[in-house]
Image (cartoon, rainbow, N blue to C red; front, top):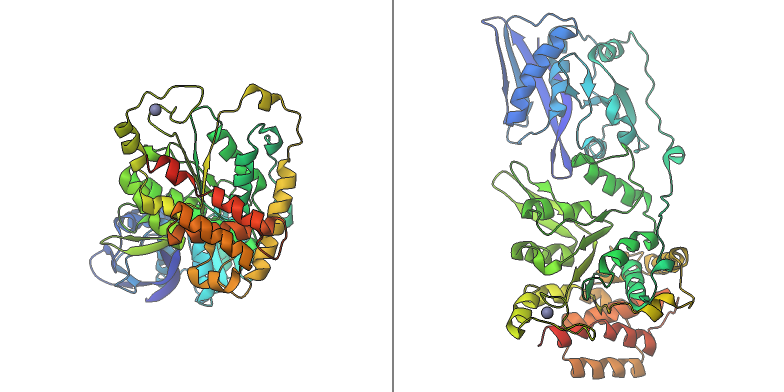
Length: 509
Ligand SMILES: [Zn+2]
């Protein structure tokens, strides 16, 4: 008997509708799956067979054909186990009611349990866009999928319970998740108030957080670069619900959804420089998977010892820094992943670390320094808005009793500046000053004549590239927003210029 079951397979973050057709005819016993299945799906055949027998059914004698349609779509993932089994049970006459309105997702264990799968949330969201409202999934995926409000999630632990439900012998209500109960504000055990003697760096990090600006810090080892970067999450604005769902989708696909439900905090990723290009940027066998830059989406990507990363990795950052996405082309499939992160890069000024340090002597030759700094190409430097030099903190600064802003105060100011930007760009596709395109800059960044004059002087003195100068204007806009000033004033522009003057000192040696 012929039957059909609906499911989905992911290409990147998008789920495509897959129909599992099943037919049993008389003849010599065979069991074949056709329709461009990936090798993981071929293994699914064995799981389906054993799970079916261990759930108390007799495996049908005869020719069993499973067709995954559309045939030209490469299908991947263990979520096809369950729909294959359901189709088979329907062909066997075990399931007698129509279940065409449901999407089935689940891996099978050999004893007939339904196991959670990676990417369930992304699959549910994609199928909802196609008009499906009812989902049958593993109990282990329920807290992730039930984030989506206008769908019905039916979680099951095993095949027998599910068959009872489909045959209307058992009533099951859609699963409801109380989001207010799981929402927990993360508390940090560190605070910017303790970052003594680094007021400039704190300020630069606040600007980065407020406007979505990338930042490069240069300073000797032990100047507190890593320590400061790790404080950044304490002042980042809270994510909107939609941003949380976007991030959760990515973590779900990567199998990194530790909480099992909505991701509440902006990600902070700090991959080591020895990590492979695939793990950092994305790629790999089959449909390319996302890398660290996508795991940092809507959060922070921290690259310590920046010049130590492989050249191709550093250069591959150009596209995401410019367009907030990464395109990965492979023979199997080409996919785009979101990669909208704030890059915080840290580096020593030279191989020994002491170039420019008044207290210690640099032992590097000028060529060694050039080679080292040259690993960061000018197109990359150009794409990092804020460049800041970190000096080692001296004892007096450390002991100073000067008022220092706490993370809570800084975050409040950041959040207010973000609200101003969201209001300003409500008719555009952007939310932060850091994302302004040259076209939008013409519309939203206006300077008074005296301020324009300062800009012109600086442009000529420092021989800024147009891209660099645009970065200055965007930063000045953020600095003005942090003060809730409608206009960009002299001091805003002057401060922004300071963050672009290091190229001269380091890269032109
Ligand atoms: Zn040196």
